[in-house]
Amino acid sequence: MAAALLLQAGTALAQAPAEAAAAPAKPAGPDTQVMLFWFLLSTLLLVLLVFVLLFTMIVVKMKPQLRKLYELPTVHDTWSGKVVGLLIGDTALVVGKNKDELMGHDYDGITEFDNDLPPWWKYGFYVTILFAVAYMGYYHVANAGQLQLAEYETEMRQATLLVSADNDDPNKLTTYTALKTPADLDAGKTIFATNCAPCHGPNAEGKVGPNLTDEYWLHGGDINHVYKTIKFGVTSKGMVAWKGKLASKQILQVSSYIESLKGSKPANAKEPQGEKEL
Image (cartoon, rainbow, N blue to C red; front, side):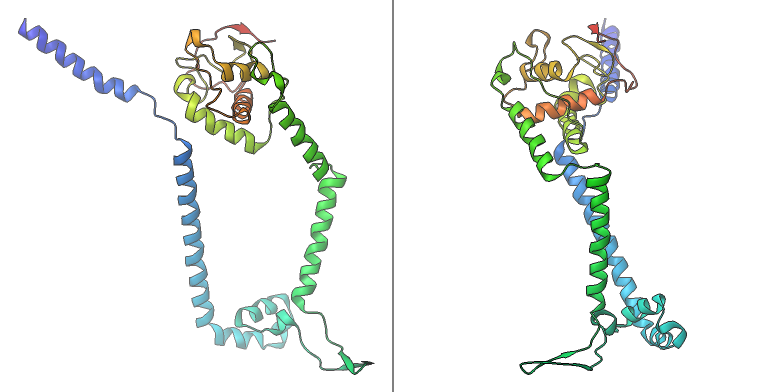
């Protein structure tokens, strides 16, 4: 009898670590992601600072040799020579050279020098021309981006939907369209990892809750049915209502993220549940 009890206790203790090891890792929350972002940004800035300091030390140490190189006629007026001149501190390359030659104009005792425009001004002007060409091509030729008025109207339509009168009626479906912008989908992914992954899996493959990546849905798989299910929940099946915990925009973001996962076929996907969506 005693031996049997000891054997049973040993088996239970052996199973506990195995179950703990099999438990899925908790997805990183927003705080962890923010900390990781700032850590990576700080590391990058530190590396850049070290690089700038080393580069400055090398330039200072080699300044006499660079000056001799800059004074060579074959180098002085070339683009590479101008780079060398900037490194050794030739201010004429930035502010230009003053000819100190009068143009012969005299306006109420005010004379005018015939000096060139400062190089920084000229090159800055060239950059604005290139920017204008790229801007016109992107917004007016390719129509790849929305102009201010169109963007404003789109946001106003979306805001109107978010505050529509039937938004709090569980018997009515909203008329949203899935959000497609990377910012909205990233926000939805973060919300999903924090609130939905414990039941549906980190890749929506299904755990306690159903698989959200296949064609089968228990309560409808289009954006508005998913929105309704998340907002009002299905208490009879353990799906909590997120109304009051998440803002309407957040629910739409996570619903849109779930829509984007359709057909992703994650590993260890749960068997289909519900009816197939056509």
